[in-house]
Length: 210
Image 1 (tube, rainbow, N blue to C red):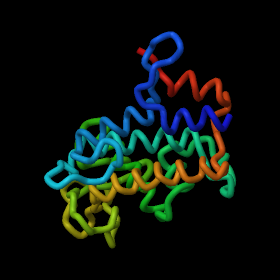
Image 2: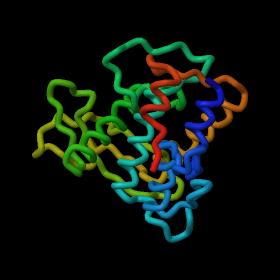
Image 3: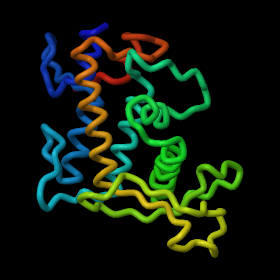
């Protein structure tokens, strides 16, 4: 198990015994996102002049959260058995100190970006996911700033006081930090595989060959 987890976390463009190139979709995805956003492909550190506010890059980072939340939790955290909780939210609960409301907002941004590449997520049935966003790539601001007054989902009522702010550079840094934490936990044998199908599912879903 430990060796396969390590493969998933580290495998990058290696030949197997049949001469095929084997890759981890986690590592492959991170390297592509780093390229798009102007980060060092090996370390994830921001390069001067990079496009750290790239929306496609942000979608990529949030998708990486989806995979992480599907696959792993720290050994010292209790398993979240709420079947309706999205994997993105699980990853943020397991590996960050974001509040519940901040986690809902990140998920809402994912929906806005991923479904129609916009800054609005209107969900009147689930008000916790109802947000209109302002985004940038500030070098020092926090990842997220919630409005003092939540937006009600009415397009005409949008203003600066009910906007949710997200720093896309800091969001990328957050995901890179989670990945670094995965590597640390794996090295200490404190990373638990959450997939119901175990290592067979991990290999089938996230290791590919070409």
